[in-house]
Length: 132
Image 1 (tube, one colour):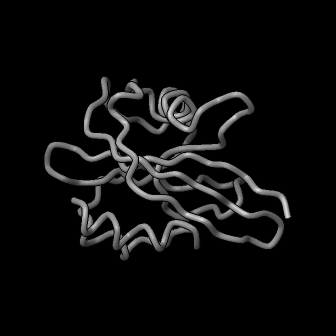
Image 2 (tube, rainbow, N blue to C red):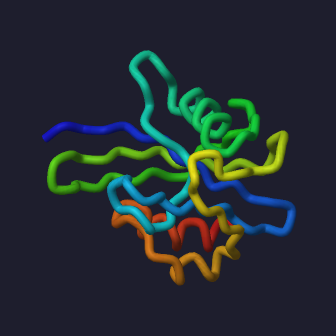
């Protein structure tokens, strides 16, 4: 089974809320809510992938020094296995904006389970509740 490396981040604002993005129509698992991030390209670190993805998807800038390793997800889907390091980030420049037609929502950690998520993201909820 092919292993896909994806990097994700819990962006945490000054009020302790976490940013979720909704997968847009036309993508697999459309309509589900997830933590921002994306595939790690060859010769790219998970941190650099997040920096790139946050610029592309949300129009914000951050730095590797602002990405704190938090946890990871390991989940088998039907046609691939997802390995996803997850970082926490409290410092960035700019205002997150959905640049790929995705909805955004700032959510309190206690309310994360109210949002339908991909199976790999669900085990991250208790970690974030304990951490924030």
